[in-house]
Length: 65
Image 1: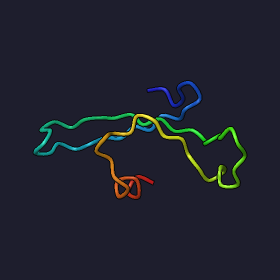
Image 2: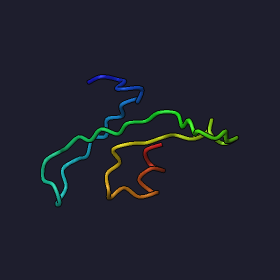
Image 3: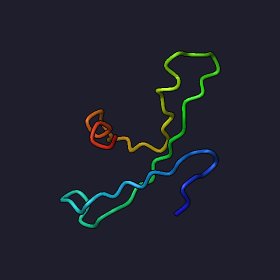
Image 4: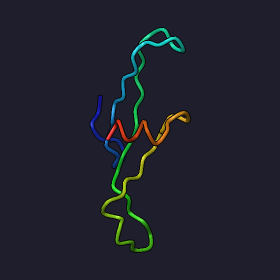
């Protein structure tokens, strides 16, 4: 698995088997530093995240990070 793709860091998230999906599965999330077109003092603390599952919640991100 590549660690970087097109400037994004690849984060592998593995899901255990559950009643909704009886086999373990993998999902890839892509991250990079946020680089807004207009300067923002909080930009250094921000991430651009792609390929987020539609069911992801704020709690999921708190556990992930």
